[in-house]
Length: 244
Image 1 (cartoon, rainbow, N blue to C red):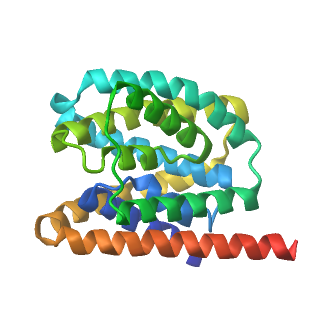
Image 2: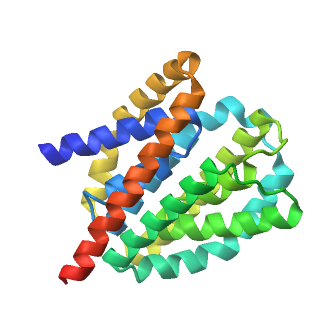
């Protein structure tokens, strides 16, 4: 019962943060799911739920998609996905958790430092490739896109719609590829099914919070949560490594 409640709380919080801050659901959910499931199970649950979120939101903002950028993201991602699958197939649990924790800490630090990258055509391909690699391997396409678009002059509606459309594509491709090459199991689909109502509840609550909550405070809270998660995963993984 405790594990089930923990799982539902993780999904609820990640869904709320997705809507209220714009941070990717997977960035928040994956680290915590790793505490409850095997890496392959955590990744597939995250991808399935992220795909559901993308499908539910894309219709409302599809008119704002920049198809030129989207095309370059997709082309780049097709190069990155095979390398990501190789990582996914050969995952070592301890090394995987250490890698995710370090990625979270680097991401949080760069966000706090207000890191800037100037978007360009070549950058679109590179970021698409990195996102494809990260989605297929750990189910997290968000970090490269989040850093790439931080501080950009791109109109926010277009940015959000284009990113979401790319998520829709890359999550679908990554999930299908993983299932074909490594399979899946009943636990993944049962857990995802039970979490669907919680996802939509979180999206609804997040929309309400977004209207009245100071976004600066919420971002600070998000940074703290990301940092805490990264540090906890890193310490836990290093302890396992030492004890083994």
